[in-house]
Image (cartoon, rainbow, N blue to C red; front, side):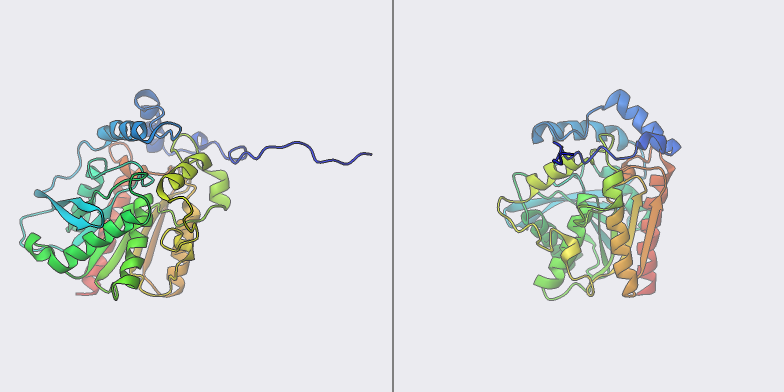
Length: 336
């Protein structure tokens, strides 16, 4: 008998489950709509300019409807490479509001305040707070750590100078979805470590955030072309975001490497059970709850990554947005 090593290739997708077999009714309707109207919207095998165009087109439909803001204000905050556009959503005409600083997702490469408009209006309505959307500069034009610096600049600005916009300086929240969830965590840690503390941050509202886990059960079984979460897609976003030669273990990028034992406020998490980032949410919920930090983790059955956009067809998305707003309100009431 002759022993030898057969030729092989590594296929990270070969053992993954077929998500179409487990979709909730609402998620199935979303996929049917995307198949008909926006197929390939999350394909990373094209230029980043084309990725952005497709993303904007797909998200336009999902932003229709939803709660209405009493007022919106557009302004800018000075950042490390120039002005950072900011949009403030107000729920009513009250003279002062607590605020959620919202950092949109999109793999650091796509997305804007416009693509996440309905999501921010929904958080505004469910929390009763102002929502401040951050249009940080995208990658690959602006690589790590520039987007984190910009988000930190916006939070600090409204903490120190928000009175002119009717924003209360303390008991703020930071929130974001997907890559925006990672940026929310990084921003909180950066404020803690670089600016003498972050005790004015009362809550984090994190929707399927990535923390840097690169393997695990969820990563091996979930993620497909349906949600743009294959290994090749995640690698594309990473390569767009991280500078050549950067330390890939930097704890402000790989949040799993950060010290999460202090300076972590009450945290709301939600994630679908068909999302490859589910392990990340479970990790964070376990670490924080073990240290006595108030945590709520909603794991939603039968839904894919980025489901929070799809409130027009998915009651699960509406419910999680309501849960996150109620969670922040509860923290405000507890600290009153």
